[in-house]
Amino acid sequence: GQQLNQSPQSMFIQEGEDVSMNCTSSSIFNTWLWYKQDPGEGPVLLIALYKAGELTSNGRLTAQFGITRKDSFLNISASIPSDVGIYFCAGHNQAGTALIFGKGTTLSVSS
Amino acid sequence: DGGITQSPKYLFRKEGQNVTLSCEQNLNHDAMYWYRQDPGQGLRLIYYSQIVNDFQKGDIAEGYSVSREKKESFPLTVTSAQKNPTAFYLCASSIGAKSVETQYFGPGTRLLVL
Image (tube, rainbow over all chains, first blue to last red; front, side):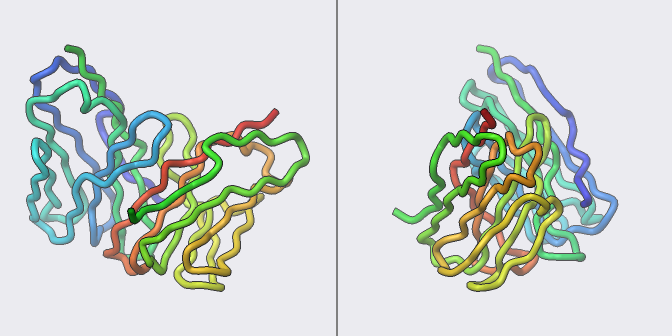
């Protein structure tokens, strides 16, 4: 099945720094979702995007649905230690109902 | 408290044994899903169900089976035909199965082979 290209694969940052990660697809997507997964737990939804160009914030997190409908980014401002985890992008393309996932970005924050 | 529960948290399987992972939701969602997660990989879809008594194969259905006799429950059986079952299994649900529906995940079950 199709997978999304998510980058970077991992990030090591200092507390207080801003973070940016993105996902790209070869096909048009109808939705973009960003999840965070803590070790040994299920992914938790952070932000859902439904329209091209949409920019949505959730606290220190901001995500955008690219205007080409083939990409999305997630920014985290002023990172804190509890931001540590794996961030996944996911979306629905026009082919079917199943969510397609990126391979994740592992974020490490040092204090 | 609405949500998705998965049990057990950890499950051990012996060679040649079938094991069943439980997934229950009280969100009144029509659609439910099973994913497999391997280290460094994204989530891969095993099976999904859009409505009671109906389910479809995902990308990696071989060696797995499911049933959907009740709206709230979508158990996954890992059969002896699945030669590499060690993984983290995640159940999810959504209001419906349309392409704009957001999926919500359970806490996962880690399956280990003895």
